[in-house]
Image (tube, rainbow, N blue to C red; front, side, top):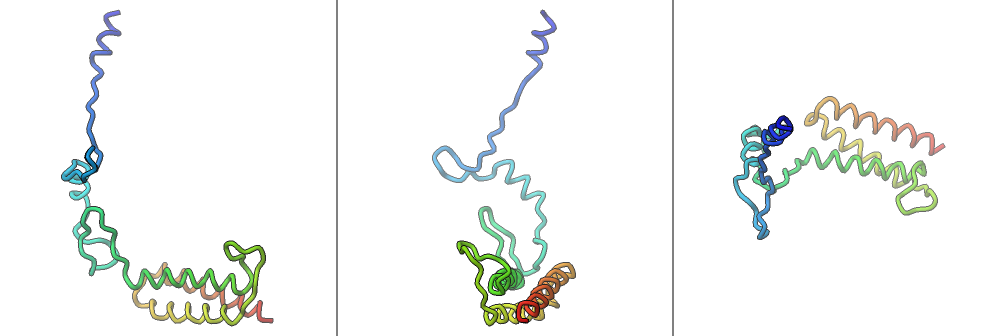
Length: 143
């Protein structure tokens, strides 16, 4: 019986409040978690040397290169849809508009060429692969 009582007495728990917001709705400053995160975060963010250090709650600013890669992805999806190879969201049947598909593919090619010196080898290879797939499928769908 004494052994069980000793084990219960040895168990102690420490509760740390890690919430970032006070009960009144204001933002809590200098929490341990924020202090530890700042200590572990390098001064410069990876990717772009022109980015300034982030303040709490701020989102990182996207570079033009990031935005162009995003646009190329969106145009790629549109090209697939316009070639009649993918169903557009909310549509019940596929439609084909090769003029718009060609414009999307040509624009992706332009973006890829402009991004070439500013992105890494993996991103470059991925974009070139997407472009090649689109171009080959365009030729097949045009026949």
